[in-house]
Image 1: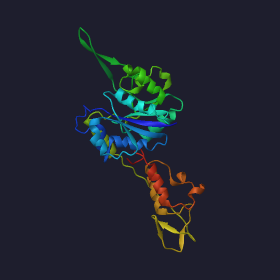
Image 2: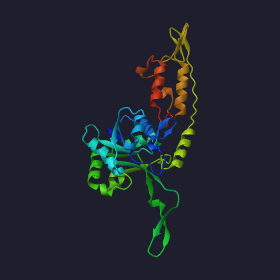
Image 3: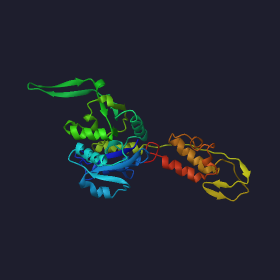
Image 4: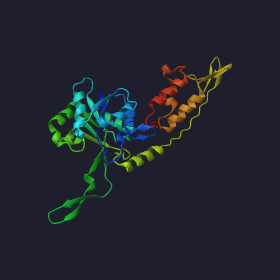
Length: 314
């Protein structure tokens, strides 16, 4: 399966009330757009990324490091912006599915993204949802008076993005049913048997106003991860001694499947432990011949490349 990740950033952020629109606000040195892009780039099934933008934001876009990102001008509405991206993709070859995502919702996890993609093997559309736990009321205006109606929250839920769709099907639905579009793309589906709703994430909320943005910033500030790593290797003749990536002059060296660097192995294990990714032996098995005598600097580099927002790094 091949996917294009479409980020919708064509709005005007009226409720955010800032000169710099929401998608280009920064947390820990990265804009909300960049955070979503960085996550999408970790997924091998995602072959292309499109940023649908508002032309008044072009100055902010040019200031970002957006490599291999296709820019498409947005429309007057969310539906128009999405359809602009779909029309571009429909004419191209090599993409069979799309992930449509709100730029103002950067706190989705890599695990959620992978779960969505996995479920697309069996369904035409996959949408994350979360249930409502608060009491829900509806204001009713009649010709006589105004009253409040309580709603059954068991029958209600909130949808989130990214939402995944078969490209040809969502393109067709946009083309023939744009007048039925309400809030998000799943509103175009009349046959919900084609749709798989999966469990979303409470932390994957949409940044609407500045209070939401402050909550998001605090979430990132609170992400402190701790890991412990240790390693022991026997010293033997006719082996080089590597410590911390440096070769040490010695008559003895460490015995190991790789170069046996206990310092880098300890650092690697501590990172893996903090990020709940297993340990160095699980990822780089001593039964795998391609890791025979490999430098531990290379192993550490491979781990760093695998890290994601969920697993410690923005």
